[in-house]
Length: 305
Image (cartoon, rainbow, N blue to C red):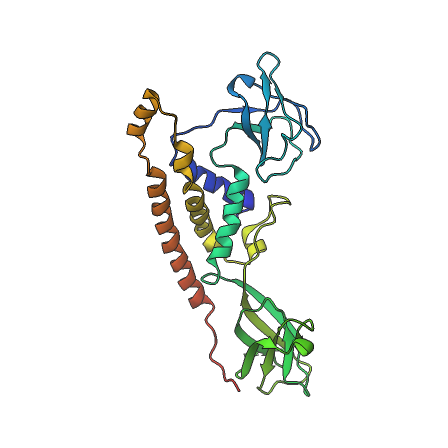
């Protein structure tokens, strides 16, 4: 299963395949703490000038450079720029000059894509409870969006689970009985004959969980989101078309003879065209994954009151 870092790398590789701009790079020659605010040592300061740099996922602002001692001086507010936070960076960490596609923004685009994929593609959850003879309606998690199947465990060593034929989902259950007293709750009515004390299993669809960008980047895609592994490439293309939509403004150069030469090499709307191309791939794969998931997890036929 791919991790957040691996998905970010795939998006970054895809984006740079459409760009003629290759950022200059260097690397740290000394570790940096999350409280360092004065100076940073790099291998080659000659490739760096005043402006933004990226170290791991953090964006920093460089005020001056010492090209002899290879020291970068930051202003007091220079750490954790553009939505990032000051973090610890190890020796030899990569330094990217004026990043065209900041990694933190790529990860934001990944989360935006995961949110946008729902409800076409959904996460799967399970909930179990013991059947009570005197009760027909049971409280279920508020995360439940649709119930895919309901089954109950039979008596004996067969380990068989039989489908419950009659059930009904209520997403606007009484707030006092099934909610928090203010907001509607979710309840499930069971109207089939189930042996009291047996376990009832509810398989349901829910909104996927997005990555926590403040924790480790080793978070695994399926484990965190709850979506199938075969939907990873949908996230890659979705994040890529969101990021590349802003490529044209970053390519705008000053009015000069050199800029006119570059204009002949790259069209003014090349970023928009690439975004449209990636969106078409994203949309095609999203529909394919959604259809695959609907076939894999069809909503069972059942009776309702």
